Image (cartoon, rainbow, N blue to C red; front, side, top):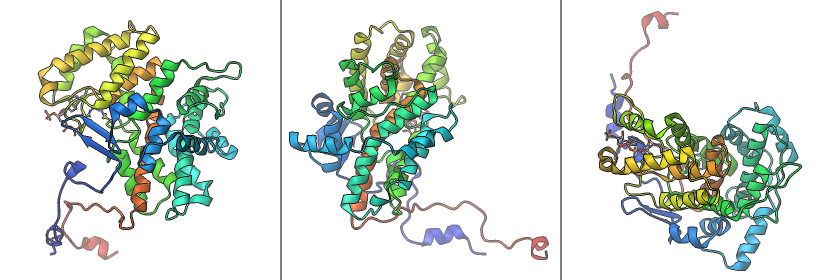
Length: 403
Ligand code: ACO
């Protein structure tokens, strides 16, 4: 009998690293993270400086091109993106095929994937012009697709993009304008959304980005790859955490019940986790969480929501978790999702849209990473190995072989 496990062991160097805790899958010059020090850099620039001095379009340019844009470059880039913000009318009709109560992420997986059925003109991934064209289309269309998923959900007519507005402002317009009333954007709210987009734009080889790279490594087109990224992001351990976090706050309901939930999180039999706490890479406060916490206070002050029940509860939970030994010893700090959920709620964005907005922000990171990979002449199809744990080779039972 041949022991297949032995064969594996004999076939050269083999590492077993579930969850890829210590395995790098690629080189990248886009994003740097030092989780112990709480450092995040996009193309070498600290996230704190980018959040303070740049807008999302600057950051998109930076992630894609490697440098911050000069004013003329920015205006050309912005124009090129806006040129693609509309959806093909046939694609708009797609929405009516979904149930009204479908989760926006489910709709986005479908609609983004379907873009590849519309843009055959730019599916040659070895052509840099085609790659750039697809990148622009994805970055431009994601806000339109996301806002339409929301409008469809609530039964309102779609609102088309307006190209004189900024990226964040245009998204708010498509989400909240109605035929009888144009949405008047408060600059504090626009800035808060822009910051959410900047902070979520890229995060090196997280699960969804690795999914995009793995899908793209077979030569699949970028629309299909980004659709795969959206699917991965949806999970509650990843992008779905901000939605799960808000639902957790609703479930806790009142400050008096926090202790009960902290005890549940500590109880290993329960398998319960406090959503919005902990991070695979940051074992210090996530720098994005610090910035989002700042924005959270700014927005709640501006909107006079400091006495909001869930916000007070969130602040109390944050305080207890930061003082509790269980959380301190495991380095479980509130993460960016903890605060971004609260900010988005204050902005009037429904919980079911939180992860969709994360996907909209992360699209530029996915596309930049995909493009970096396929421009590398030495890239290979991703093909992880496994440790086989099934039966050794055996003959099928006689009763079957005599049939
Ligand atoms: N609540 C309670 N305990 C937790 C939590 C939590 N949120 N997160 C981790 N722990 C505990 C684990 O039970 C484990 O305890 P043990 O050592 O006693 O067994 C220890 O902390 C280490 O946990 P791991 O699962 O090994 O940590 P890992 O790095 O694999 O997980 C993750 C990171 C998935 C983010 C985890 O902390 C988690 O599930 N958090 C809640 C979901 C969340 O907020 N996700 C958002 C991530 S950020 C983003 O996607 C932008």
